[in-house]
Length: 322
Image (cartoon, rainbow, N blue to C red; front, side, top):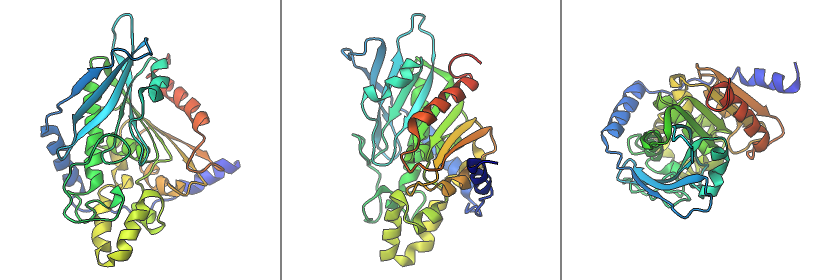
């Protein structure tokens, strides 16, 4: 065994107890049913003068949860026969946004469509119109933390599933070849959406967050440091807050994932620690692979990992030949 193999074997033993509440499955069944009843309200505007002439670029929005419209870009390479294309749904990292159309041309060069969506109330143009009953510290990780029905990431997870609806509604999309892709918070949304929706054909998640959330809060890692700050001020809410977080911990959702998964972690990542994600990865029952980068931090070995994603997508018959 080499160094990486030894570390992987250690991490594959990490199985902290699940924190699922007795009504966990019912909570998500009812939440998804609420989402399905909401009209998608997809609006699509093509950018006629976009300078990448071989790509159709659309400014899109759809109705998210709690009276919030989610904004995104949809890009599709022009095809001679007008056939349907595999589609990547891109979820961004914490405080990021859908970016600019040029950020996503890599996927169109592979002959794929791409839908890049905002997370509500972060760095993009998408607001957050949900009502929260109390004032909280700065940081979305605290919004609604005393009630799982009100919690910020309930809205975001359901918005992320509705992104699959939006991608499927575009005429260029091959609904049998939907790929979820994200880094950090985006990787967490990949895990959540893959667990809550059976349509994706593959999931790609790098240095994912929102896993082993009790440890994330205790260690004040990344965005969940805000939750620790909140509980320093209101320690009487600790059990309630941890109970809320349990519904959104991807380790509690992992067994629901059915599509093939490719993940990566970095052993020097102090934002989304590798061990925290293995609490999720070790419970995924579908075909799965993970790449470990011992000396990278949260930045990950981006280009190297991207090469491995291409091989994985070909293996899954998403791009190229078998």
